[in-house]
Image (cartoon, rainbow, N blue to C red; front, side, top):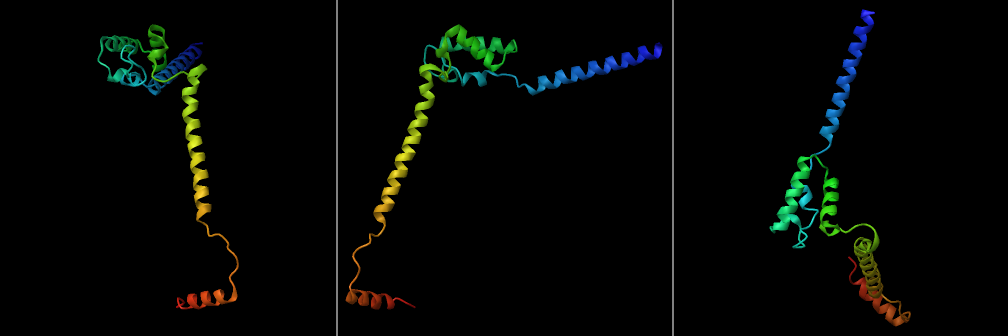
Length: 155
């Protein structure tokens, strides 16, 4: 009985150490959020500028909230969700990906695709206009003169 208890104790300790090691490595993989990470993605609701560029009292208030949430161990997404809950969706620097805001993501891509298409068509037309046009065939006298002129350039 004593041997069985000793084995169970060893197995239990090994399991506890492995679990603690796995939890430790999971914490090491998750990077800690910093103020600079969040400042570049949210706006000062008064100035309408990035929080990283604003020195207004409102921006300082937002930074204080971000620092408090970082100290509580919140992730970047959780912090941004808290800012939206506190200040509204205008606090985010990027538009949402649904509704009318979706146009802010789609329209630039469409404009770029249209510009590429226009440039491709224009280049094709320019290239075709520079190709020599086939004219009427040369008569025998002109052909002989052309051959004589070209033969003078042969080396």
